[in-house]
Length: 491
Ligand code: BES
Ligand code: ZN
Ligand code: ZN
Image (tube, rainbow, N blue to C red; front, top):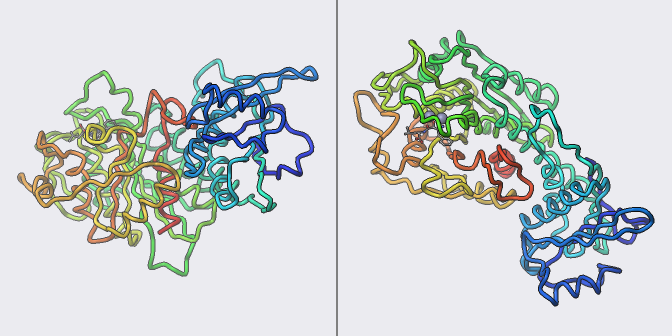
């Protein structure tokens, strides 16, 4: 899809689809011939520019279909960037349904000072909204829209190409994550995940190393290995390095993504109802791969090391069992209370590896870690556990930039005590104490060696059968990729 920007007064010929971003009050001056029609719709209350609403006017002129798609963006004096993304997606999807090739989106409601951000988010939505995972469907949807033109109505004719480029690149990072999460686990084995990361690194300029069982044993990552033992697929430690600011080697951001390629629960086996969805249990890994790809493509001036400890959590004669005690890479003994609380075991060894062997100076881990996070705050927000007010405030700003919501959990000492019991140093599941999303996060926090740390639990938001945003698709949401990109950029 080609995305460009032109100034209203320079446009010689408009496309057959004109999308109008409409606030709660129509701006007639920019709406040309449809002004009377649109005014009528507002007056009658048929279309009032409310967020998420739209109205299509269809006409037939010169043997061609002409569409005017009105897309609501809500209050004019409170411009909402996510409403812009949704509006662009509504317009482009409507054009696609009606088999149109070219779309103009008229930015009549966007004041000059919002142009930069608006162009970025509109480009994001344009790049994401027609995504479908249909690799394995015999009948594929044919996309008709090939070009989107953003038509600026500002007096100033500035060059917004870099905003378009950034929007497309971060959106494509999100789509990389969606593709990986949607892929079934018989295809996306740990080895295949490593291959995909390597291919992206070669294409977009970051270094990738994929280590197998022998090397993982040498490193002493016995907790990670314990989880992997139930599967015939070899575990892989996937390490991606992007040094965008080599002079500043005192600052390396560690992005640690949970990479369970299938989570059957192990001997604490899951029920069959939703087990198929556990192909998505590498959503954190997918997010870090999408984010480091976007960072490398943008050439951001930050050093990033991303680590994914990839394996399945299955059952076999050799699988780990409840009551087992396993030793982590940093020497702590963990009593296994529940083999389905496997993610934290792989994560903590990945964290130790990143600290000891890659020298990272901050830790951001991201994981489909607990069902509890969804029970606590639902699926529209990522739950956060952290040890740094400063880093959390950077995350909050990043969250606003991409409209991926975050919510900070409390960290009370009583919660910390819950995991420090049993026959070893820690237990991997507290049972029915409640606060499961927090205790899971704090377990990871035991391994960060006082480095600034954020833990993002995306279990509830990684996969949806009913997307709540127009630019998302059924299945994987790619959540986390844009958030991590914006976060690292702001750190
Ligand atoms: N992968 C799951 C968490 C999950 C649940 C992800 C739903 C996506 C959707 C995780 O490994 C798990 O099974 N967690 C257990 C932890 C419990 C045994 C302490 C859970 O949430 O039930
Ligand atoms: Zn599990
Ligand atoms: Zn899991």
